[in-house]
Length: 228
Image (cartoon, rainbow, N blue to C red; front, side, top):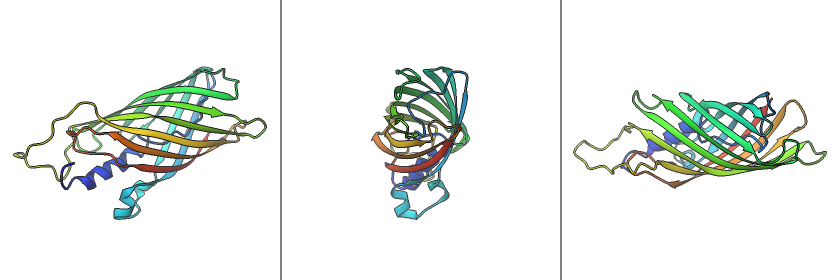
Protein backbone atom coordinates (compact mmCIF):
# COMPACT_ATOMS: atom_id res chain seq x y z
CA UNK A 1 0.00 0.00 0.00
CA UNK A 2 1.32 3.45 -0.87
CA UNK A 3 2.17 5.80 2.05
CA UNK A 4 -0.54 8.30 2.90
CA UNK A 5 -3.22 6.47 0.96
CA UNK A 6 -4.86 4.60 3.85
CA UNK A 7 -7.51 7.21 4.69
CA UNK A 8 -8.62 7.32 1.06
CA UNK A 9 -8.56 3.54 0.93
CA UNK A 10 -10.84 3.09 3.95
CA UNK A 11 -13.18 5.85 2.84
CA UNK A 12 -13.59 4.07 -0.49
CA UNK A 13 -14.33 0.86 1.38
CA UNK A 14 -17.16 2.55 3.25
CA UNK A 15 -18.55 4.23 0.15
CA UNK A 16 -18.58 0.90 -1.63
CA UNK A 17 -20.77 -0.53 1.12
CA UNK A 18 -23.51 2.06 0.53
CA UNK A 19 -26.36 1.32 -1.85
CA UNK A 20 -25.58 -1.96 -3.41
CA UNK A 21 -21.94 -3.00 -3.48
CA UNK A 22 -20.43 -5.28 -0.85
CA UNK A 23 -23.74 -5.07 0.97
CA UNK A 24 -25.34 -7.81 3.01
CA UNK A 25 -27.37 -10.65 1.59
CA UNK A 26 -30.80 -9.61 2.96
CA UNK A 27 -32.65 -12.47 1.25
CA UNK A 28 -33.29 -16.18 1.69
CA UNK A 29 -32.28 -18.84 -0.81
CA UNK A 30 -35.79 -18.87 -2.27
CA UNK A 31 -36.51 -16.97 -5.48
CA UNK A 32 -39.36 -14.53 -6.08
CA UNK A 33 -42.51 -16.33 -7.37
CA UNK A 34 -42.93 -16.37 -11.15
CA UNK A 35 -44.38 -13.11 -12.41
CA UNK A 36 -44.10 -11.32 -9.06
CA UNK A 37 -42.00 -8.28 -8.10
CA UNK A 38 -40.45 -7.98 -4.64
CA UNK A 39 -38.83 -4.93 -3.03
CA UNK A 40 -36.22 -4.97 -0.29
CA UNK A 41 -35.32 -1.96 1.84
CA UNK A 42 -32.84 -2.14 4.71
CA UNK A 43 -30.52 -0.10 6.87
CA UNK A 44 -27.67 -1.11 9.10
CA UNK A 45 -24.40 -0.43 10.84
CA UNK A 46 -20.84 -1.13 9.66
CA UNK A 47 -17.96 -1.71 12.07
CA UNK A 48 -14.35 -1.77 10.93
CA UNK A 49 -10.98 -0.33 11.91
CA UNK A 50 -11.97 3.15 10.70
CA UNK A 51 -14.36 3.45 13.66
CA UNK A 52 -11.40 3.10 16.02
CA UNK A 53 -9.34 5.63 14.03
CA UNK A 54 -11.85 8.42 13.35
CA UNK A 55 -15.03 7.55 15.20
CA UNK A 56 -18.51 7.02 13.78
CA UNK A 57 -19.73 8.70 10.59
CA UNK A 58 -22.74 8.67 8.29
CA UNK A 59 -20.94 6.11 6.12
CA UNK A 60 -21.20 3.64 9.01
CA UNK A 61 -24.96 3.44 8.39
CA UNK A 62 -25.50 1.88 4.94
CA UNK A 63 -28.87 1.85 3.19
CA UNK A 64 -29.69 -0.99 0.81
CA UNK A 65 -32.46 -0.92 -1.82
CA UNK A 66 -33.23 -3.73 -4.26
CA UNK A 67 -35.87 -5.30 -6.48
CA UNK A 68 -36.36 -8.95 -7.48
CA UNK A 69 -38.60 -10.38 -10.20
CA UNK A 70 -39.52 -14.04 -10.64
CA UNK A 71 -38.85 -15.41 -14.13
CA UNK A 72 -39.97 -18.90 -13.12
CA UNK A 73 -40.68 -20.37 -9.68
CA UNK A 74 -37.00 -21.31 -9.41
CA UNK A 75 -35.29 -18.44 -11.27
CA UNK A 76 -35.38 -14.73 -10.50
CA UNK A 77 -33.40 -11.60 -11.37
CA UNK A 78 -32.51 -8.68 -9.16
CA UNK A 79 -31.44 -5.05 -9.46
CA UNK A 80 -30.05 -2.68 -6.84
CA UNK A 81 -28.41 0.72 -6.65
CA UNK A 82 -24.64 0.33 -6.93
CA UNK A 83 -22.62 2.83 -4.84
CA UNK A 84 -25.13 5.55 -5.63
CA UNK A 85 -23.62 5.96 -9.09
CA UNK A 86 -24.54 2.83 -11.01
CA UNK A 87 -26.47 -0.44 -10.96
CA UNK A 88 -25.93 -4.02 -9.82
CA UNK A 89 -27.82 -6.79 -11.67
CA UNK A 90 -27.92 -10.44 -10.65
CA UNK A 91 -29.65 -13.75 -11.22
CA UNK A 92 -30.49 -16.52 -8.73
CA UNK A 93 -31.40 -20.17 -9.30
CA UNK A 94 -33.04 -22.35 -6.62
CA UNK A 95 -32.24 -26.04 -7.05
CA UNK A 96 -35.19 -27.11 -4.90
CA UNK A 97 -38.92 -26.99 -5.78
CA UNK A 98 -40.49 -23.64 -4.97
CA UNK A 99 -42.88 -25.11 -2.40
CA UNK A 100 -40.13 -27.00 -0.52
CA UNK A 101 -39.16 -25.70 2.94
CA UNK A 102 -35.47 -26.17 2.12
CA UNK A 103 -33.95 -23.92 -0.55
CA UNK A 104 -30.46 -24.22 -2.06
CA UNK A 105 -29.46 -21.63 -4.62
CA UNK A 106 -26.61 -19.99 -6.52
CA UNK A 107 -26.46 -16.28 -7.26
CA UNK A 108 -24.15 -14.26 -9.53
CA UNK A 109 -24.22 -10.68 -10.70
CA UNK A 110 -22.47 -7.75 -12.31
CA UNK A 111 -22.23 -4.18 -11.02
CA UNK A 112 -20.93 -1.05 -12.71
CA UNK A 113 -20.51 2.50 -11.42
CA UNK A 114 -18.86 5.45 -13.14
CA UNK A 115 -17.69 8.84 -11.91
CA UNK A 116 -18.00 8.17 -8.16
CA UNK A 117 -14.43 8.98 -7.10
CA UNK A 118 -13.47 11.18 -10.06
CA UNK A 119 -14.74 11.98 -13.53
CA UNK A 120 -12.79 9.09 -15.07
CA UNK A 121 -13.04 6.43 -12.37
CA UNK A 122 -15.11 3.32 -13.06
CA UNK A 123 -15.73 0.42 -10.68
CA UNK A 124 -16.85 -3.06 -11.71
CA UNK A 125 -18.01 -5.75 -9.28
CA UNK A 126 -18.55 -9.47 -9.90
CA UNK A 127 -20.30 -11.10 -6.89
CA UNK A 128 -20.93 -14.86 -6.60
CA UNK A 129 -22.74 -16.58 -3.71
CA UNK A 130 -24.21 -19.88 -2.55
CA UNK A 131 -27.32 -19.64 -0.34
CA UNK A 132 -29.23 -22.00 1.92
CA UNK A 133 -32.44 -21.43 3.88
CA UNK A 134 -35.12 -23.47 5.64
CA UNK A 135 -38.65 -22.31 6.50
CA UNK A 136 -39.48 -23.74 9.91
CA UNK A 137 -42.91 -25.42 10.12
CA UNK A 138 -45.56 -23.30 11.84
CA UNK A 139 -42.86 -20.92 13.08
CA UNK A 140 -43.33 -18.17 10.50
CA UNK A 141 -39.59 -17.71 10.22
CA UNK A 142 -36.81 -18.79 7.88
CA UNK A 143 -33.14 -18.94 8.96
CA UNK A 144 -30.73 -18.45 6.06
CA UNK A 145 -27.03 -18.23 5.28
CA UNK A 146 -24.85 -17.30 2.34
CA UNK A 147 -21.17 -17.54 1.47
CA UNK A 148 -19.29 -16.39 -1.58
CA UNK A 149 -16.74 -14.13 -3.19
CA UNK A 150 -16.96 -10.71 -4.78
CA UNK A 151 -14.26 -9.17 -6.96
CA UNK A 152 -13.81 -5.45 -7.65
CA UNK A 153 -11.92 -3.79 -10.48
CA UNK A 154 -11.24 -0.07 -10.03
CA UNK A 155 -10.00 1.80 -13.09
CA UNK A 156 -8.36 5.24 -13.34
CA UNK A 157 -8.44 5.91 -9.60
CA UNK A 158 -5.84 8.27 -8.15
CA UNK A 159 -5.80 8.76 -4.33
CA UNK A 160 -5.26 12.21 -2.86
CA UNK A 161 -1.72 11.33 -1.78
CA UNK A 162 -0.67 9.58 -4.97
CA UNK A 163 3.07 8.93 -5.51
CA UNK A 164 4.99 11.53 -7.48
CA UNK A 165 5.25 10.84 -11.23
CA UNK A 166 8.94 9.94 -10.89
CA UNK A 167 8.24 7.31 -8.20
CA UNK A 168 7.86 3.73 -9.35
CA UNK A 169 4.41 2.24 -8.77
CA UNK A 170 3.34 -1.38 -8.74
CA UNK A 171 1.94 -2.67 -12.02
CA UNK A 172 -1.68 -3.78 -12.12
CA UNK A 173 -2.05 -7.55 -11.87
CA UNK A 174 -5.48 -7.54 -13.50
CA UNK A 175 -7.22 -9.95 -11.13
CA UNK A 176 -8.89 -7.22 -9.06
CA UNK A 177 -9.53 -7.13 -5.32
CA UNK A 178 -11.40 -10.08 -3.82
CA UNK A 179 -13.47 -10.23 -0.65
CA UNK A 180 -15.00 -13.22 1.12
CA UNK A 181 -18.71 -12.73 1.83
CA UNK A 182 -20.41 -14.58 4.70
CA UNK A 183 -23.93 -13.85 5.99
CA UNK A 184 -26.27 -15.29 8.64
CA UNK A 185 -29.83 -14.07 9.02
CA UNK A 186 -33.44 -14.80 9.72
CA UNK A 187 -36.59 -13.82 7.84
CA UNK A 188 -39.59 -13.22 10.11
CA UNK A 189 -43.26 -13.57 9.08
CA UNK A 190 -42.29 -15.72 6.08
CA UNK A 191 -45.91 -16.60 5.36
CA UNK A 192 -47.19 -12.99 5.31
CA UNK A 193 -47.22 -10.25 2.65
CA UNK A 194 -44.46 -8.28 4.41
CA UNK A 195 -41.36 -9.94 5.88
CA UNK A 196 -38.76 -8.55 8.26
CA UNK A 197 -35.10 -9.58 7.96
CA UNK A 198 -32.35 -9.46 10.58
CA UNK A 199 -28.81 -10.17 9.42
CA UNK A 200 -25.10 -10.16 10.26
CA UNK A 201 -22.51 -10.19 7.46
CA UNK A 202 -18.73 -10.40 7.46
CA UNK A 203 -16.51 -9.23 4.60
CA UNK A 204 -12.83 -10.17 4.56
CA UNK A 205 -10.20 -9.29 1.91
CA UNK A 206 -8.67 -12.42 0.39
CA UNK A 207 -6.55 -10.99 -2.43
CA UNK A 208 -5.46 -7.55 -3.57
CA UNK A 209 -4.24 -6.11 -6.87
CA UNK A 210 -1.13 -4.09 -5.87
CA UNK A 211 -1.46 -1.69 -8.79
CA UNK A 212 -4.97 -0.24 -8.33
CA UNK A 213 -4.10 2.25 -5.55
CA UNK A 214 -6.35 0.93 -2.79
CA UNK A 215 -7.04 -2.02 -0.51
CA UNK A 216 -10.11 -3.20 1.37
CA UNK A 217 -10.43 -3.84 5.12
CA UNK A 218 -12.45 -6.28 7.24
CA UNK A 219 -16.07 -5.22 7.76
CA UNK A 220 -18.79 -6.39 10.17
CA UNK A 221 -22.29 -5.38 9.02
CA UNK A 222 -25.51 -5.56 11.04
CA UNK A 223 -28.74 -4.94 9.09
CA UNK A 224 -32.48 -4.86 9.55
CA UNK A 225 -34.85 -4.64 6.62
CA UNK A 226 -38.24 -5.32 5.10
CA UNK A 227 -39.30 -7.26 2.03
CA UNK A 228 -42.67 -6.68 0.43
